[in-house]
Image (cartoon, rainbow, N blue to C red; front, side, top):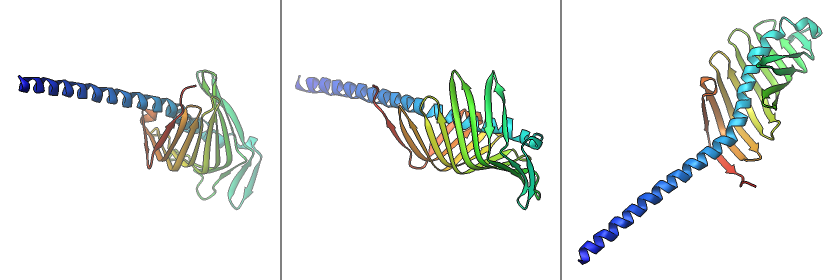
Length: 216
């Protein structure tokens, strides 16, 4: 009788332990979903940087006559180039740079200094992107943004990257040297971000830390 009672109690404890384990797994899943809700808006802005480059940068060369040209030792210089257009579905963009330089030795290489892009993301959302210096290769369709990249969305999300490389043909973005994301919903830090498959896969590595703000 005593043995049967002990066995029954052990089975109950095992069942309770299983339920607690499932509850912990469910809570972890909920936390992961909340974290994704913080990350996705800013990641979409980073993807928009690549889409803007694909739509805008190749057009700088045909329209360079409108920018005020000069020839220097650096190459063919376009002062204060400005372009505006549509990304599709009625969404507008505007790209402004302090200076654009086309290399004489490598005409496929275009350097943009003081790059600012304003993007309409739809649903009354806008994203502003700033890069101190960007280099675009028209033959390989690779955009390198260096010396700091900042992204600010109209809903209060901000991201700071040391550098980003956009592979337009592959739909791939690499952000290296550290990324920091702040949002009304939380804060994220990582050493690196990789976006592949046109944004379908997102991976953060290198000392990732996530802080979720409590709901008001």
